[in-house]
Image (tube, rainbow, N blue to C red):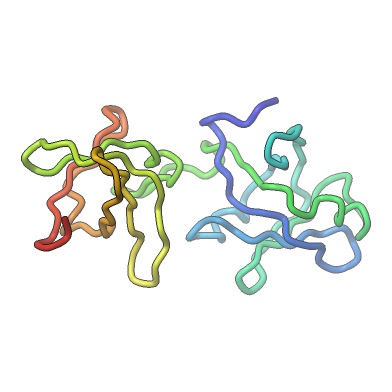
Length: 172
């Protein structure tokens, strides 16, 4: 099995939790509670083999997700999963709310202003307390930082790989 666009990275196993084989996962999602209904997860290290696991128990604890997997019954075995990336199939998470996108789907999207002038390509998404910020690799070199707010982002069409923005005065 191979991780492809049908899968999303939703966390990283950072440690064990307790002595019964549970692992502590740092969620990579804004809504870790959505993970508590998962029945199957996939673990892999970058470039490594993918392991499929049936979920025995999953819950949130403070800012972490605590996961118990079938076949992982002790602390030592659970410890061997440290630093594995946690993936799920997109369809397991259900539909996204309107105007909500998976970060990995936005990387590489071409950005244009409202005059249909090409500005660059989204190269990264920065997390800030107020809102996400899209880092755009400009066509002529350099980068442009655009706040991911409705006043700026006018349209996103993933099928066309295109975002239309109306930058605030002084932003570009």
